[in-house]
View (cartoon, rainbow, N blue to C red):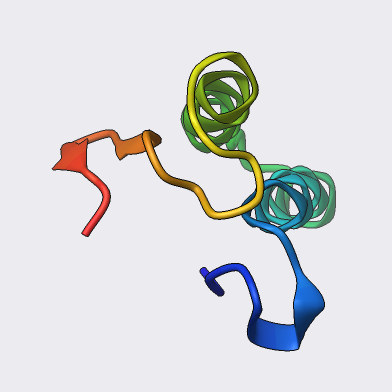
Length: 67
């Protein structure tokens, strides 16, 4: 995932792009991507509610803190 400043994208816009991609994969392959969609959705909500939606600070990955 690109950090803020790379290609002038915010962390939140990168997450929205990732969510869109997981939905496309599901549509094209017919395979469920529900878990991936839930994880991205969780990160989106975390960025909006308490993190930094521009830089991604305060948003954790499913396994722990964002490196």
